[in-house]
Figure 1 (cartoon, rainbow, N blue to C red):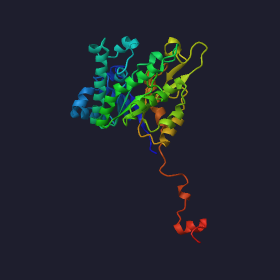
Figure 2: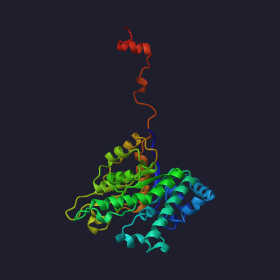
Figure 3: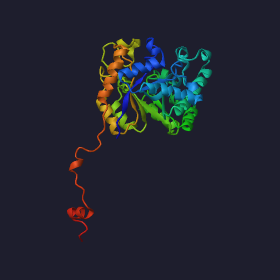
Figure 4: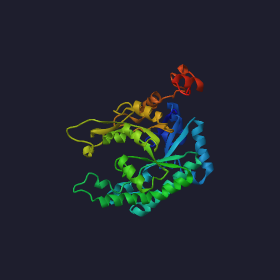
Length: 353
């Protein structure tokens, strides 16, 4: 066992929230003042972190780490959820997905995919330069329009979709292998990889690639009514990153798990600040600790009610209060007597014949 590191902060929802948080130094100072020990950094805010420069220049990578270190902060992982999502886009979502793509590749799905692949490879290379061995992303989705369909979707279509997804991701995974970096998929609704079944299907098609791992975020499982504690037991060997994000599902007579096209406050299932929802983080952190999880506990704030500043302050304290400093010895170790072999034999009545 080992003590989970933390608390860390995923900064994506805080970048540019105010003037102070519009610069790396300002954001680092603010996070450190709150008591965070590390940052999880997205690769889609180049004024905060330029992934291309980091991949190409060790000096830039060292300077970035130096800035964090001045405020007593470490780097947990780089994240590339937007780029991962653009690796596989069903044509029905071209318009909305183009909104998160660079202007120069909008309206050109193949150019957009190629850009995303290159970005993910840069993220792996930058991670290696920064001395970290894991990164975070989404899988993208070719099949989400066919979820819960009527009439039923031909299984050949589902199989073809997963085969294509695996084909697109294989070069990125192989590049991660060459850089010594794991790619941790955040299982998330609207992505083809959104639960254990879809992850296993993908894993089988990529030959159980050694660099294919998971980011564990129980909020996405609670909203899908997945056993998020049992999930840890099944996939502990793959979990290499962890988001502390709470959620609740409040049964409604009007809407259910699909949300009824409502905004977050009107849905039956919604994200909350840690401690304000229904997720059992005490058991989660106990289970991860007991199974030897070696990463960080990282706050991801996405509460539909509470403002982000209170969410960050309270979330830091919540994580600190729940992390378990592992014991150095069993509680009854002092009572255990060491016996010589001959004494053991005598007690058990063996070796006398």
